[in-house]
Amino acid sequence: MNTPHALRSLGQEPSPDGVPRPALIIESVSKSFGRLEVLRGVDLEVAEHEVVCLIGASGSGKSTLLRCINLLEPIDEGRIVVGGQSITDADADVNRIRRRIGIVFQAFNLFPHLSVVDNIALAPTKVLRRPRRDVVEEADALLARFGMLDKRDQFPDRLSGGQQQRVAIIRALAMQPDLLLLDEVTSALDPELIAEVLEIIRELAGQGMTMLIATHEMGFAREIADRVCFLDEGTILEQGPPDQMFSAPQRERTQQFLARIVAAGRL
Amino acid sequence: MRARSTIQRARRRDGRWALLIGLISTAAFFGVLGWLVVNAPNWPRVQASFFNAQEFQAALPDIVGAFRKNVQLFGISEVLILVFALVLATLRSLPGPIFFPVRLLVIVYTDLFRSLPGALVIFLLGFGVPALAIPGVPTEPFFWAVVALTLLYSAYVSEVYRAGIESVHPSQMMAARSLGLSQFQALRYVILPQAVRRVIPPLLNDFIGLQKDTVLVSFVGVVEVFRMTQMKQSAHFNFTPYLATALLFLVITLPLARLTDWLVSRDRARGASR
Image 1: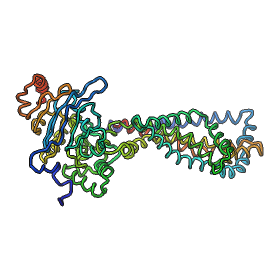
Image 2 (image 1 turned 120 degrees about the vertical axis):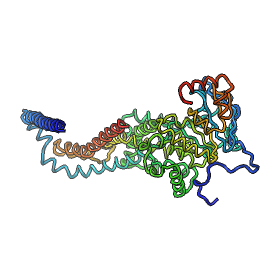
Image 3 (image 1 turned 180 degrees about the horizontal axis):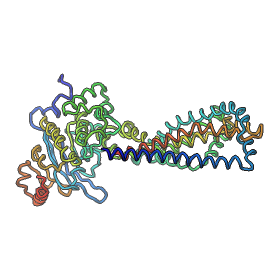
């Protein structure tokens, strides 16, 4: 345990008995915006070190589900448990819970008035109240690991979309989350910039980071996911290992969705 | 290559022509205007009453001395306003039903003080409160003048701050909260730094207004530049001291107005390049 935080393998220690514990349990979660039912009783478990991809049409509830897990949207019904702790109880400490759950957005949402290194260091210094010197050292280590150290003093508007998204991922990692939520992180990127972001996610998966990924990149989902869930009209209609989901989906709606993706040349 | 340099030379020639024509036209226009004014039948009377060099020299030292009072007034008020208005704007942006009374109070405050004439508030505080003769409550007019100006202008400036806060996209708040920052930390470290930068031009505009409004304080007996000017004017029944005071205000406010315009056009250029 003498290695600095950032160089330690990301993710959690294995459970004592070696059996993966659920990092995330979602129990019959429902959520409406006014009269629009976005989630209708979603059930989902994600084990530690597991990578789960959420696929489905726009408006199927993928983003909303991720935001509910990060408590950015309050749920109407159901329960969400992270690392054994129910986070949707009325008396749950929202700020404390969010420290353990990282989320990366489609639109990056970097802080434009802060340099790259300050974007990364803000939450660890202000939320965790860790010494700035340590935090910056770790931020530099993370930047170096993902080939971004030369950009540490740049401001976000000087970076490409792919670079901004990589910084956003590093910013989330700097809080050393137990669970990382990725919300269509490549959807706003030019095609030639997608690969550099996917590469980071691939590396994180290799290191055992627990991830729940909403994505339109079917090829990537097939390659990286331990499990793929198809979200349709606010419920998980079908789930399974990627090979089965993409080669032999059981449900008609899943088949139709994938047929459209294939027709669009995205798989 | 040759063609291009010919075009450039032609452009430069056109540019020089335009400059020359502009200069001649401006000189001719203001020359004629000046001639008309100076040769008007009543010009000597106007000159004696408004542009009297002797009166100007005699009045200037006292007027500059009194103007220091105005500088103190707006200097102290501006610092207080910057802080107080920020508190108001922050209170107004607190979310949730629990904070409704706080938001309501701020709304009532800003509506009230933006609607009332400044002179009325200055009178009320400058004469009214000392007249209560409550022990321990200050009675100096200068103190109440600062309080009145701060109350009046904080209402405007808090609205400016609020516009700035609301101009920062909600996704910034979401990103900050998602990292575990509290509502207050997100405001302090993410929203406000961006908001303040955007509101500097309208803020400076309000400060120009404040600097001019410091003359209202003369009503409650603070001997500032306007009161001093009145005394100088009535002593010799000559209006030249007003001209001296006007020049002092121009020296302070004109650069600020120019700076504001420059900042606005710079921001617009930046926005266009993005």
